[in-house]
Image (cartoon, rainbow, N blue to C red):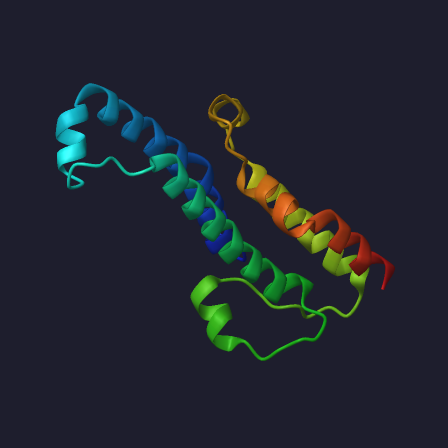
Length: 146
């Protein structure tokens, strides 16, 4: 229905594109080591570190959207955000309804994620990043208890 297109796009970007980039850079760096190094002025960058930083930034950005639109305790005037992200801000004072909305969003985000790929490469999924960095389950419990 369009309410979480940006979060869905971020989850797909995080979970599939980062893995593909990692595989591609690994292939390039092992087959053409000299050419790869020369394209970076003689030193190969730490691709794993770069992808980890990108992963962290994507998760943080996604979290800011989720927090602002669903966990924010005070409803806000965010017409620009609604139009640009197709997400809706908190309109429900009932924490139970807000919790249900968040669960639905998380379910939708997890659809289509290939956990086999993620485990093979040791990278956490977008949702696992939420939990690791922001303890989303604890926050949902707090929301539920309010």
